[in-house]
Amino acid sequence: MIPFLTPGTASIFGTRSCQMTAIDKHIEAPKIAENDATSKQIRGSSLLAFGKFLSVGLNLATQVLLVRYLTKSDYGSWTYALAAVAFFQTFSTLGLKRSISRFLPIFHEKEEFDKLFGTIALAIATILISGLIIITVVFISPELISQLISGNKQPALLLLILVFLVPVEAIDGLFIGIFASFMRPGAIFFRKHVLAPLLKLAVVLLLILLEKDVYFVAYGYLFGSLIGVLIYAKILSGLLHQQGLRQHLSLNSINIPFKEIFLFTIPLLSSDLLEILMHSMDTFILGYFHGTTEVAAYQVVLPAARVNKMVMRSFALLYTPLLARLFAKNDYLEINNLYWRTTIWIAVMSFPIFLMTFSLAKPVTSFFYGERYESSWVFLQLLSFGYYLNVLLGFNSRTLTVLGKLRYIMIINLVVVIANLIGNLLLIPRYGALGATIATVGSMI
Image (tube, rainbow, N blue to C red; front, side, top):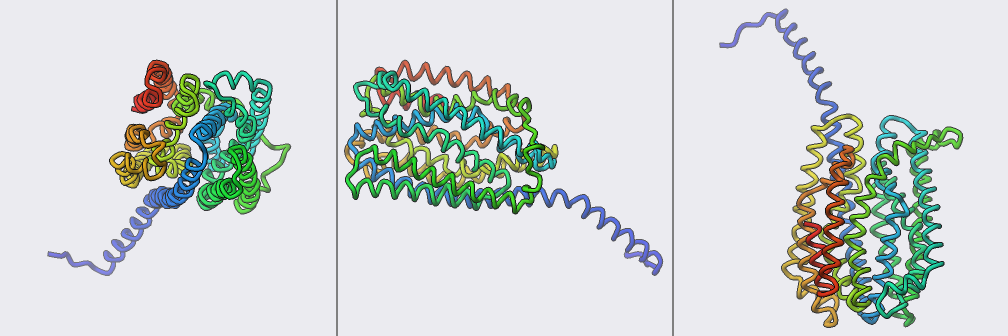
C-alpha cells in the first residue's frame, strides 16, 4: 500500500531527492571523467594500432624489396649495422625517454611548467651530447669494429653512415613521448605510421630503379629521418601554442629536476640494457662467430615476429602518460581498470597475428623472403611464440615503472640479462641462428 503524501511532505521528499541527486552527481563526476580518460586512451591507442598496421604493411613491403634485391651478405651487413645503431641509442638517451612519458604528464597535471620545460631541455641536451660522443667513438675506431665481424668490413663502413641516426632517431623518439604525454595520437599517427614508412619505401624503390648499392639505402634512411624530425619540431611548436604553454616558456624560469629524474631513470637503464641485449647482442655474437650470412638468416624474420607486439607498442604510447596522471591523483582503482582493459584489448587484437606468424610460419617465410631464407621459418615460429606470450601478460613492467617499483624491475632485468648472455655464448657458436633464437625466446619467457 502506498502511503498518502501531503503536499508538504511531497515537497520535502522532492527537495531531499534533488539534493541526493546532486550529491550523487558530484560523487560520480570524477569517476565518469576518469572512465572517459580511459576510453579516450583506448580510442587513441586504437588509432595508433590502426596506424601501426598501416606502417607494418609499408615496412614489410620495404623489407621484402630490400631482401630480394640485396645479396644475403649485403642484407646481413645492413641489419648488423642497424643493430649497432639500436645498441648505441640505448645509451644516447640514458633512459630519459621513459622519464618523458612519466614526468611530463605529472608536471602538467600539477601545473609545474618550469619543471616540464626543464625535463624537455635536459632530455635534448643529453641526447645531443651523448650522440656526439658515440659518433666520435665510432669514427676513431672503425678497425676495431671490423674485427668484431667475421671476414667482412662492410658493416663497419655502413655504421659510419648510420651512426648519425643515433641522435636523430633519439630526438624523434623524444618528440613521440611529448605528443603522447599531451594525448595527441594524431600527430604520432601521421609522422610515425604514415610519413616515416613512406619515406623508407621511396628510398628502397629508388635503390632498385637506379640500381644502387646498400650504401645508398643508408644515406636515404638518414635523410628521411632528418626530414621527419624537422616536421615533428613544427608540429610541436603548434602544440605548445594550442595548449597555452608558450606563455610559461622562459629560459630564466626553467627548473631542471636533475635529481628527481635521474634517480628514476638510472635504475631503469637495466630495462633498456635488457631490451638491447635481447635484440642486438645475439646479432653481434652471430656476426663474430658465423659472419653476415648467418646474421641475415636470423634477422630476416625478426620484423615479422615483432609484428606480434605491434598492437601492444601502439597502446603503450598513450598508456604510460595516462597511468602517470592517474598515479598523480592516487587513483589506484582506475589504474587497475586501465591495466586490465588494455591487456584484454591487446591480447585479442594480437591473436590473429600470432596465428599467422606461428601456425603459418613456413609458408609466410617462403612467400615473403624467397627460397634463400626458407629455413628461417623455424626462427619465426619460435620468436612469435615468445613475443605473444609477452603480449598476454600486459604492461607489467611499464606499470611497475610508473608506480616507482624500480627494485623489482632491476632484479628481474639483471637475472634475464645474465641468462640471455650465457645462453647466447653457449648456443650460438655451435648452433648459429637457431642458438640465438632459442636463447632469445628463453630469455623472453
